[in-house]
Amino acid sequence: MAREVAVVQASIAREGGQELRLRWLLGGLSASLVLAMLVAAGMGAVQVPLRRLVESALGMSTLSDDQRTILFVIRIPRIVAAALVGSGLSVSGLLFQGLFRNPLADPYVIGSSGGALLGASIGVFLLPAVSIAGFGTTALLAFAGAIGSIVLVYWLASVNGRTPVVSLLLAGFAVSTMLSYSSYFLETLDQGFGQGMHVLSSWLHGTIGQPTWPQLAIVSVMLGIGLAGSVPLARRLNTLALGEEYATHLGISVQQTRIAVILIGSILTAAAVALGGLISFTGLIIPHILRMILGPDHVRLLPATALAGALFLLLADTAARTIIAPAELPVGVLTAFIGGPFFLFLLRKARREVLS
Image (cartoon, rainbow, N blue to C red):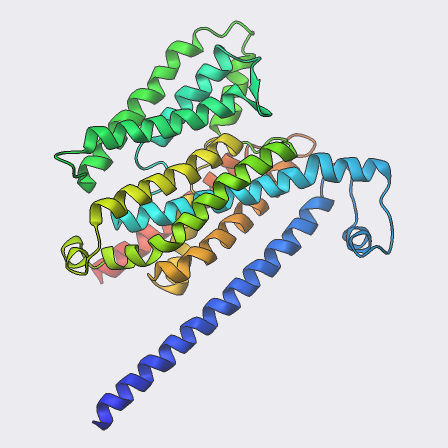
């Protein structure tokens, strides 16, 4: 009896320690995100001192007209966009990693990147002058292409009302590859002396650009819906991690959960792609890092991943636009140089643990 009591007490203490760690982590990430936004707002070709920003926010001083234009028309929309895209990609990566029970899964694992590339190519080379709700056709058709390719992958992978994980992965790889290479035929239509290719290349390597406030409002609503829809899926992913048969015995519909994860993950990925292009590694390494800190519980991982993804991409985009100023690097290039070596380090570490 005493032993059982000791085990229960140890379990309660461990649970309390994990909750405390989560609170500290969420608090630290939130504070870091706010500080990073303030610092990023002051950085650029025209410096705005952090002290001046804080004093202006507190009503202790005023900004010049030029400073207000730079902040509220150029920098702050881009800062918000980077945070939104980073959060959306990271949560999408977390959902797909949980669904496939594979830490190598990322937001593009079931073919959204190929469809987005084909859609963006149609926008760049065939409909460059069209704009709807403030979005150019490159962003709109990239969004539609990402959603369409995922729907196609799901349809191809479905067998008798079921969608085996292996079929989803294989269909995603095949569809993404075919759609990506299909964009070549559109590239031959470039009559702008390479201007279209430059635009497509910039989008392909991930570029936040200069979004407008109406664009941010639309994407914010979509990402908000996706994040809210992720909350009830977190516990289901915890159960699925123990096996589909076990989850079925507990009354969870594996097929419905899979559809919901694909739907929510697709919305998050497509919205992020429409705003920032194809940005690599953010949705792969952020969930991986948080899982190393907090463990496999998706309920705890979800809010931490959303905040950490926003912070990571905001810092990366700030560095991308200032590291070689006045020129800019595509933020996707920077995330690749950060995420690639980190991921290779994790692979080598895992290999040493297996061999030891």
